[in-house]
Length: 266
Image (tube, rainbow, N blue to C red):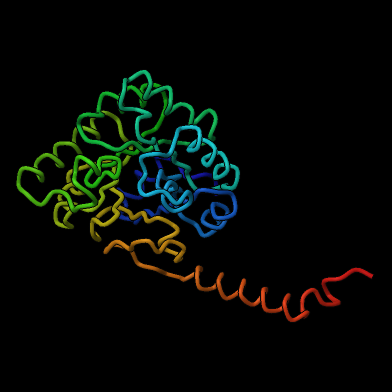
């Protein structure tokens, strides 16, 4: 099977088939995620937290995002690779937004980009799509807006906020976005938005009614423990497995059991 395309995702929505996405940030994990069979890999600006050890996503740069996207693209054969526009890579102007989005395609080898924001970024989404850069939009809890939002809080609880998110979703679809990430919103609102749009919705903390789901890989496999959001389900605990393996290595070296004959040359 060839690489997943936008048309494949649109077909999956029309046929009621769920879309799976995960993040990845380097060659080894991207290769594993791709082989596992997800439809898309997001090279998320979440790498600032789960890879670089920063407090939030705001400091990560375009150069760093392109660097990680290039590694992920090199590892994948089937999954669509989506580069995540970092903070201040698109806010200043339409021209700068298009230029930076193009870097993900030209330098990073991605097939699409993701951008946070509602109606206020619609003009930039339109310009990117007109420049042949596919766009996955992102509304609800947008981590780059944590200072304005007052932290990582569920969005869309009031009637006014609900109406605004529905309007944002429609506007972004009209601007040409091929899909829409819904983060940390009530599941009934996510269901309403999903039913309103012809493009697929991808939920993260938005309940079961979205057309697909995305999670941060390091949350799924137990490699990030600083905090665990309510919407995370951990499917493995690689941190514990790694501690166990490394501890066994230290023990064998100290006791003279490693290296043995099998690991030595004659």
